[in-house]
View 1: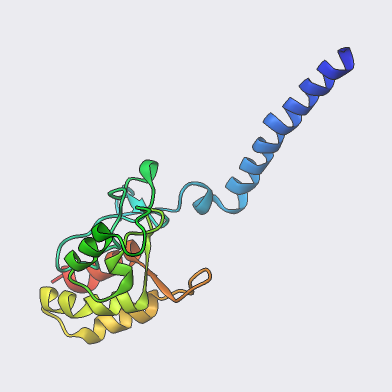
View 2 (view 1 turned 135 degrees about the vertical axis):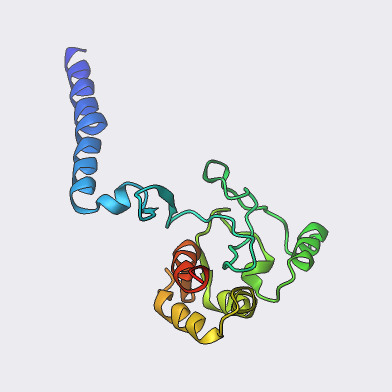
Length: 172
């Protein structure tokens, strides 16, 4: 009985305290940005968002995020679980005024920070008109912000694109 209690205490300390502490220290030492939530800050150091969590953008002069079933709340992230031929799913898709699949369906997690390049391309004309600029600087920004998707298509981080867009469009 005494051996079992000692083993329980030793393993609790080792695996419940030691291992998490070690992993936290290594994460903070070598990957501090990622370990702290990939937070993006403005020039004055205020946190404006995370590169890992989608945010809503609705103004015409910004790139719009993918629709979110959780209203972009990370603590309530979820998909809709609508079946493919559900009437509510069809009604939602028709209400989105887009022909890009990523913009006609909710994000699987509800907080997806990225959009496929095609979904971004479909918004450049609107942004160009709203900012009263030619599309060529927007195309250049798109090319500079494109990154490889995890397993799928190339993607753009919406928040990072909009921060860079501020320098082009909103500085006028």
